[in-house]
Length: 194
Image (cartoon, rainbow, N blue to C red):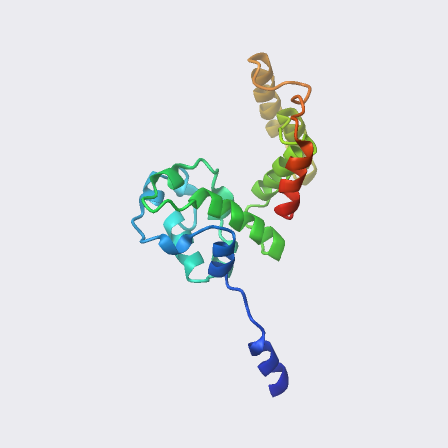
């Protein structure tokens, strides 16, 4: 590599992870590492980084470590961490933003099934103009799992669970009624660059 190429690369501004988070209104710089988010999270047993570690690493600009961690994909978005944060940081929202950023930048995703479910979930909401058809989501996801790794035992277990949910009225065969404001919902997805 020539000196000229190196100099031109150094002169180009690089928007760091903390700056992109700030632009997205995710104020991770307010975190003083009290660990209340990690203390309240019900899923820390499955995470490779605790929520307070993710926030700290994001603040330090460690994009690779954060975007390739299991933690952002394991996060269920239950909002416990956000509720417990004394500085009002939207930690669950930050985790969701990091998921989308990992997909956009083409990072290796350690939890592929979770990423596929996440994508199907958002596509389902977009297709139904703001509502989610659980039946459609489950059907798409189950077909994905069957194609990926067929397992008759898993299929039987999932069908039993689906039958129980249907009998209790938890899932409907048809989708939900459409919401008014489909144009506004599509605009939200457009702004989110989904």
